[in-house]
Amino acid sequence: MGSALHTKEKIISVAEVLFSEKGFKETSLRNITGQANVNLASVNYHFGDKKSLIRAVLGKYLDSLMPSIAETLHNIERSEHVTMLQVFSILKQPLLQLAQITPNGTERFLLLIGRGYAEEQGHLRWFITTRYGEVLDRFVAQVIRVNPTMDRETLFWRLHFTLGSCVFTMASSEALMNIARSEFDTNQRVERIFDQIVPYLASGMNANLNNQGIE
Figure 1 (cartoon, one colour):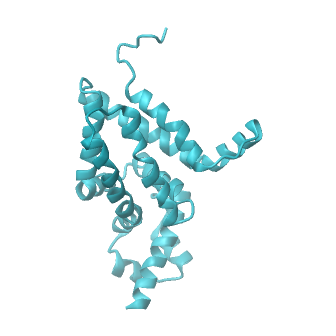
Figure 2 (cartoon, one colour; figure 1 turned 135 degrees about the horizontal axis):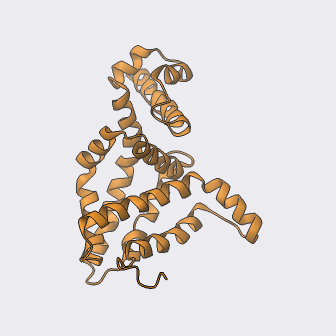
Figure 3 (cartoon, helix red, strand yellow; figure 1 turned 90 degrees about the vertical axis):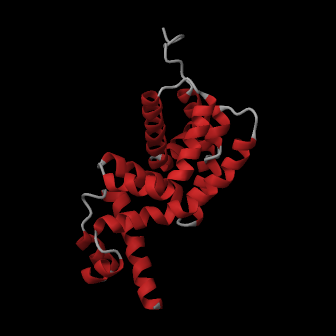
């Protein structure tokens, strides 16, 4: 039993590195089995197919992230007045805590999510909305609560712009922090990136649809 569990964890560990570096489509099961030093039958036994393995890799992070977000949502939901900045700020600590699962876990998770969307892994969207839909719905409800006049199409695009900004920034976080240290001679950490990006995202979500003030 212990050996089987070790093999399963080893496959997931190797797969998440390859998926984040090469993408889901470009990473074959043979790439994974070769690097994990296991046979293809082991992957089929533990996961069944590649899609199930992809979901297992994301689930490793989401099973920790979503309950954490759910806890932080309680305070927002009980507050009489909420701002978009407060809504987006609740994501900071749950995301940062992913580093306790794997070194650079925050960056790796967001990169994997980004690849899932960029490579049109539709089964991942189904997996996330089916398994974690309640927490996602609660978060979106708070976004709508702050800006109740926003139509569903605008909400759709702005949430995806938000995700895209997070993915790009966190995937480039190491390079960005090195540049910032050189340019501003300050100690840069991942927390500092969140402190910079959260107000930006909150402002973007609240942007005036009439484009007032842009000209």
